[in-house]
Amino acid sequence: MQSYKGRFEPTRFADLTVTVDFHCHSACRFCIVQEGMNLYRGVPFERFQQAVDDNRHKPRYRRITFTGGEITLEKKLFEYVAYARERGGFEHIRLQTNGRLLADRAYAERLVEAGVDEFFVSLHGPNPEVQDFISQREGSFDEAWAGLENLHALGVTVLTNTVLITHNVPHLKALVEKVRAVRPTRMEFWNYLPMEDFEDERGLIAPMAELAPALREALAHAEASGIPCAVKYVPRCLLGEHGHCVDNTQPDVVIVEEFYDVYPKFACLWEAKCEHAETCLGLHHPYVHKHGWERELLTPTPRTTPWREPEDGLALGTDDPTRPGDGFEGAPPPPTHHPAWLRLVEGVAEEHGARLATILLDRRRCTYRFEAEGARVDLLLTKRDDGRPALLRTRSFNVAYRHLELGEGGAGKATLAAVIEAAARTLRERDRGDLLLDERKGLVGPEATRRRRRS
Image (cartoon, rainbow, N blue to C red; front, side):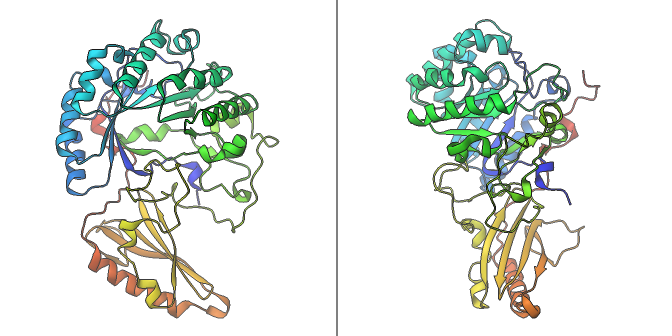
């Protein structure tokens, strides 16, 4: 059985990201879609329209994010934004951008007037010496910074993203100090993921012995400045008191499916012993190959619950749109805080003297875990597929059960059997067809791939 650490699956229902095209006027040394510039096409406008129309009829996403390459180079960007604003039912429209063209105040104003209310701006250094070296484009820092100042003056939501590599790790605190001036809603720090240079011939993978202290210092400075932060792909135990910043979830992405086939895999020596193993990915394989398992650096938090090797991806904390939508802000929700999915089985367990212990939800499946008399069983929903075996099918789902574990002397068997039968019946009655699950990762098939060899 393969742990989720060996896979990558988008998990965050609140957000849909649309990859419009693969072209850019920077050449960042770490770019994870550099190979895609030569291989992948942007999402066809008709496929984008379909995703937007789906959300209008069956609301799932609160936010749509447009990305590239560099999204502001897209000639049809305003058509994409207009269609999303008028047809999608989204609360927020976000651009993920290097910010360089936003130095043009008039262009930034046009985007805001068109309906873009959030900007996720890449900033990889606190000054031109660092940023321009990383982007390999002279003047890129000055342009991005002018863009950030324009956005701040326009009063829109600003977030920054910094990819952690050997060249900027020593400058992280200085970066936080610089960004304070534009009052970002959040700063995100993503550890570098090699998508083609798996041997790290470019020397970009920073050793944790250097990265972790610098990142902790930056996070402390951000916290003192009132700036929330998110960290991806760094082991939680290395962040100390800032471990709560770890958020490894990703939005659903309308991108060619093949993109995720080359995504690095993750592992951790202490997975079975650590309390945070379900949310911390550990180290990616290229890091382990270069720097080792970091046995002495990683310090697992002792588990308070028995270890079970997970079969599913990272679970969402909640599907409630009134709570923070990004998965890491505020106190964690209770294990059954999924109002839309709870509605499908609400009250069933209690009628039979059992309890619904948790709801595990990711983009591929919804798992209801019922417990009674020391026994437990999982009721599993997946996307309806008439070609696969199932206990029963509803309008939207295949329904099955798994992991039946009885109490001492077989206790709980009759109770859980009654719960499964009643829950299945209730699911069929309550499924209105307005909730979606999807087995795909990228949501787009081979039509978005250029049929030529990788460069």
